[in-house]
Image 1 (cartoon, protein in one colour):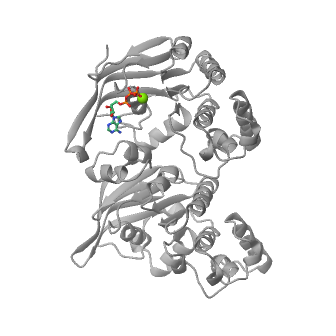
Image 2: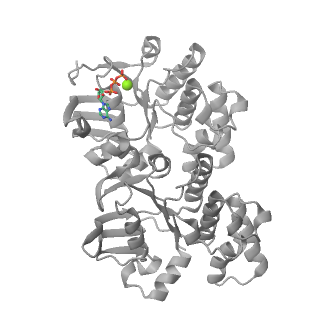
Image 3: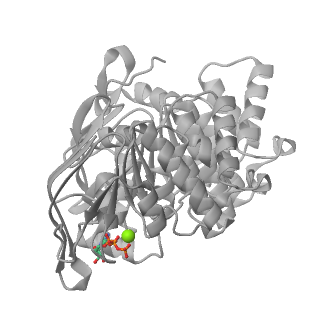
Length: 261
Length: 229
Ligand SMILES: Nc1ncnc2c1ncn2[C@@H]1O[C@H](COP(=O)(O)OP(=O)(O)OP(=O)(O)O)[C@@H](O)[C@H]1O
Ligand SMILES: [Mg+2]
């Protein structure tokens, strides 16, 4: 993996997604550079998840393009990749942390297998090496190593979310998309996750897009922020700028509805 | 190091029936290396607003805010967001009134972060952070604890430690001594003097007159109607 810091890792241009006549998201554009964290906030139903799914190729945008930097091939149109190419990209360079960890994990195999699988999909075969990598990541996300062979069914919500993060990061992706990763977790668990994500971003130099309705989370993690409403980006800028000096009526409402974001 | 030209700032408050607050009108000023400009004026005259504009925490309506960054003048009003982030990392340190940190991260790590972000080895960064915390009288038993539960004055000193640990060419200080006792106020005055001596350009709001008299090299009076006196 070559370090790439002369240009954006991801270029999103005019991405629009309709569901029939209903707008999922409209005309969203931004660049994401290596090592950058982009937050996306907005009320529920504002199109945040639709946008994420359209970026990852899980949904096909109605119009617009998503380009991703693929080393010597340059910026490649993600929509033009073949299915196997896209799946390979998803398994190697991209990670997707879902709001509901049960959707991002395989609940029928052990915790350790959930993490090891992604390595095996990349061709790792040496059992001992896989196992030690799995232990390293479980430890990193603070899951008791004694639970490695347990089924995720026996895990709490916070543990499931951390397991999902380990499963995604074990292959050292360059781009991670997260949908409400701290939703439904209690405050102390949230703090742990934030701490974890912050250190991973700085250690691995990964780029992160994080969708959340929690302004405190983006304040602490995101360099830049998009505010979405009814499928459109109504305001964007540096996170602290948008939160401290909001211009759009909707952003002012969002900010004023919470106590000191 | 800093040149502000005809800067204006107003706030449009959608939620209060669309009121426009015009806070700064045509502000112009200049700060050179080694100078400390103290912003003075009544409460609400826009001192913090001006400091925040310099950090690009607030967006200016029009005018120019030029800062010297890596040998070049950059206009903070027009700079790309990535440029602003780079300037904050390398050139401008800002002591705000709030400390915002991720819970669970120990005070020592919070303080050494600006050095680590620059790639300075952890053991060196840690040593500097320890010196800084010692100088600011933060008891050692607090170093390993997250500042989220610290007292107001302790949090303020963590903010100060974080901003003075690195020799930023420009420092912005918004009431850095507001919550401090006399001993710690003196430490902060010393830190500011040291920064001036090494050539930092400083813009600050100092409520405490003694502190202001001790550190400022010039005064900028701000008036209520958004102008400068
Ligand atoms: N984000 C904001 N949105 C709306 N109005 C703001 C905002 N920030 C500041 N103001 C307004 O701008 C004016 C100047 O405020 P500012 O905080 O700059 O004053 P100050 O001179 O620092 O006062 P003090 O001495 O009390 O700290 C005030 O009327 C304030 O309400
Ligand atoms: Mg003020």
